[in-house]
Length: 169
Length: 366
Image (cartoon, rainbow over all chains, first blue to last red; front, side, top):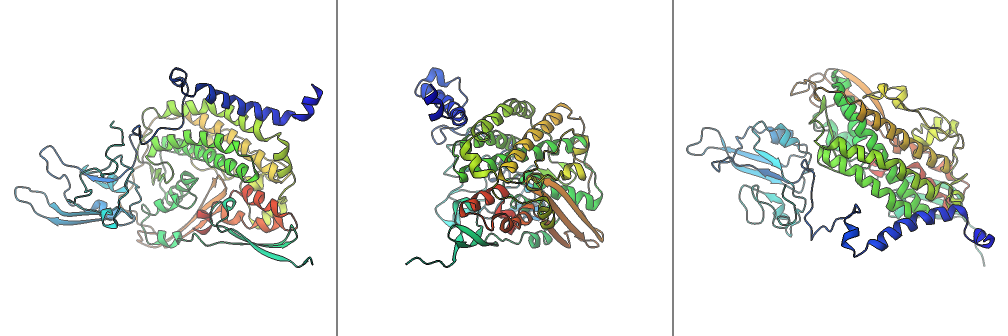
């Protein structure tokens, strides 16, 4: 017993007890679904299981449409002015049968966007939001310049990479 | 056969334990450090100049990217500095929430410090445990403002939105587990003989040198000077909070470890007080859409996790942006103490000294 005390000093034994406790908890719960359900895990099986994000999560900028399928944006340029990195470019135009101005061009340079949500805050017409997308990778540099229409991703649809992996809520 | 001349080596800028892109030029005599020169500037982005060309609202997003492990503290300094410049007062509820989030951020920053500092010195287990608790805090930040790291949490005049539903419950759950988790770190480190051998008496700097070099924060408090801006010049809701300033007389790496752990306990206390006494009311003051400054200058300092973080604004007449903006970054000033700490000591102590200063290179280079 005395030999054991000199070999394993108290301070290190206390640390080992702690790590052993955690080791045991993981070791005896591995591959046991019943036990695993009681333990709160900090890691998520992310690509297989869709991620649950906070409702306020700041993802990619998206233009919204109203019930008739019309673009809500009225080109007040508030978002263009407030943007700290000047990633939004809007061109004012007209559309037949619409009183308010219509954005002919709404360009968004995602490369430089810093996802601060100042644009959404400044918008008085609730016509833009930051959605819950965080997987914004693309193969070409041009794919990061989003417009009103576009094949890869545009201001209305989700990005092709991420549309399967964000949980709906 | 054996050469006895002095050797000059570079530690960094890509060394894993320099916490970023810090390059330290060292002159070695055997294993003893003769001279030490920190070389900085690898991460320079010109934040101050950029902020001079942006409006008072826009400039805030750059403060997130200075000290990126304590973005909320940086935001607090910016918004309170601008509020001081324009004479705006945030509502009481907003100030309470600001205080609470800043203290959470202090814990998150200290946990990251503890994790990486212990990892540098050779205690890997703490790294994993500390990051587990930091995860809980980052989830809280995500719930509050939608981002985990570059938060942009506050707005000039208050907050953008009130606390989200469920935030208080989540925060209370964190408050419940955190003291036990702190005990775990203490079990792993405080009495551990390897940890003590690496930290006790290492990288000493006494109070006179600290004051002469302008060192603030836990490094100064571990030298026995009870200086804390939360007490000396209280902002936000700190004047209404009951907390202590932990100090130690030893002024070595071990003392700084103990001071930071004690600070986490005090932050835990402040968060508890904020949660219990959260007042009702609005979270945003009435402010004009466009802020036009007068000829005016303001220096506002807050206690960031690393030390005194000060924002200096000069306004010009009718200016939408600050005429001059300067940041007194705590990591930048604290790094000056590095040569004093390690000259004449062993090479292995350099790693402990850089770790114990808790520098973030994003803030040093700006």
